[in-house]
Image 1 (cartoon, rainbow, N blue to C red):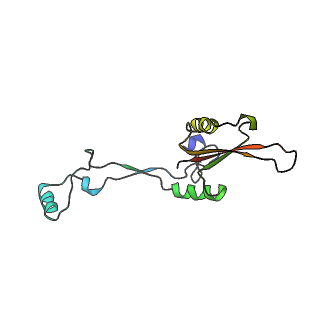
Image 2 (cartoon, rainbow, N blue to C red; image 1 turned 90 degrees about the vertical axis):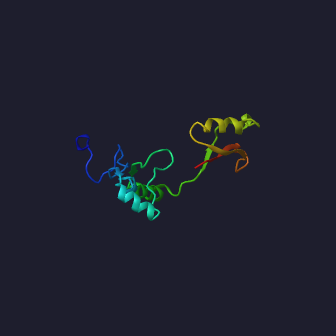
Length: 142
């Protein structure tokens, strides 16, 4: 990776905001190791099971990203806590608001994530003569 400009301690990506440590693979649990007949008999006597889990696989390797928690803390410090609510302002004109609009917006927003609720609110201008605004509130799942 050093030939592409990366050096130890820096994050991946153009803005160096990606992971800083390499991903690793954890070893399968000890129960997946082949046992001798004597060991199987001893385990059976003590109630220790070494049978494969459902799905027929005895074990699976697991990718471990040790820097994930650190990245999430950094992101929370920079941008604050994440919210599931998205606010869209002036997505359309006030005269375009009708009963079908929330469904149409939710259908489009479902292309980028699961929408739990969609509300379209017309906010009157703060001072006399100000134009009304349209705000759309999307509650996203997860």
